[in-house]
Image (cartoon, rainbow, N blue to C red; front, side, top):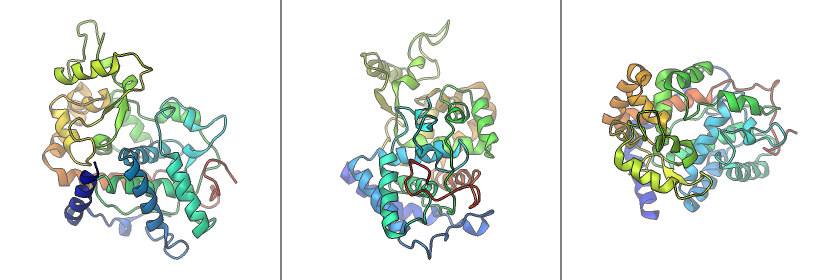
Length: 331
């Protein structure tokens, strides 16, 4: 495992010449790549050190931090509301419970920053910056993170239950949920590529493995060998929280193998395979899946672009938000 990480670190230098994104010159609104240049100059090194340590302990943490950012931005915008505790906590929403991880990494980064530059860096910005290093240290593209978000004052558990794209949703429904937050169908395909790293629980895909329909026991869009191995994993009792690689055969590397798997009917989630195989996916997303499976550098570049777009969903300004001292509670 350690040697693979070392290899990814060195190969990142080669990818970086093509994939490095300098998009801040085209930024709109209040966010800026240099927002904390004077007020917290050690932000980058602080986040990098904490994420690197967390991923050294568990490589999967890169995927978890990326997912945390995604699940934050789709509810109330990118405002750190997913970090709040309380009866309406988004942590308790069905898409997040026993699923979203990495809160302790965010808390550790925030504690370091409160020592170095107290009251300056928002928790929402910590989440966005941690996701960047989760991607980069997994071998993915470097991209400029726009900063200057404020933290939201309230959580929205009902919004998390309804707004977050689900692996059980059709591609049409997922595309609409993206459209509702200002993202497009291309963003759907590109950001789904985040599943090139990480794992998923049996409860989210076992409906494809048995009693799938009146005519098919197993989802016919799933490779038979993959289905057989997943049946063994998921049918041995347990609570459905057993996990499988989202990108079988390349789960530790941020690359375009995810799309190659879709062409081979090896997408783990219905929402993944649907990008290539479902009727609405054939019409709206299949061509992009094919393009990214054939061109890794195009995927890596477009992924960085879409991450910047997602990170700009409804950022709060100074009058509407705050800089939380502790990410799990309002000041």
